[in-house]
Image (cartoon, rainbow, N blue to C red; front, side, top):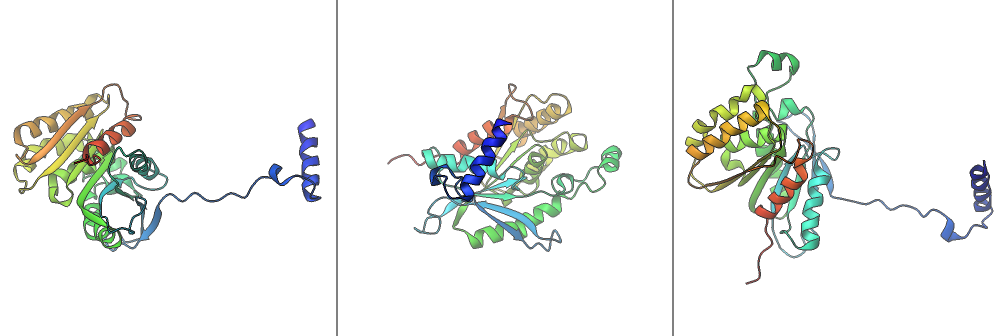
Length: 278
């Protein structure tokens, strides 16, 4: 009751102009973190959300920047998380300045998963299995938009976790020239009974020449997810091209819910190290 009376007195005093300005709530100013675009897409049949974080000074001094493409990169997904790591590296000088492009997902199993032949998955997720179309969207529409609109250099990285990590691995195996480096964090290789991991050795043997990087990490997942990762790692050990740099960093102290932040930060530091002084 006392709090209500005090609030009422304060409100009346404010109306009468007798409350000091310092006691009134100041008007807020929006905090702008990046830019959001509704990118028209003929491939996807509708505009798609693309979010971009630019390093300070972008476009002012002729510098060009590597690009990190983040899957599940919507504003309500992982864009702010990963762009925050880029900003941290810029502020404390621990990593190079990087352009972060968040590509939002709408129907994740449609866009990020390869087509399954498992009847249970087909019944449970009837729209599943159009990752090839989403890859065309990236190659034909997202990447050209980014390279035209922003000061990019010749380095591009694709990052994703969980089902997005599955898409990263599939792209690294089936379309290796699309990006320079791939970061797959706890990828859902269990999908379609581990079929992608089982194809890895054959796909790796058919890779075109060219230096590329694949970074893999996995939490304490166990079961078919770990089993499929083990198959993929064995394929890399036996069949990875000589010009592919790959790392496998299991993180048994992390869970599926906690692995992304630390693994993404380590990927930033490995892929975008701050140039050392000559």
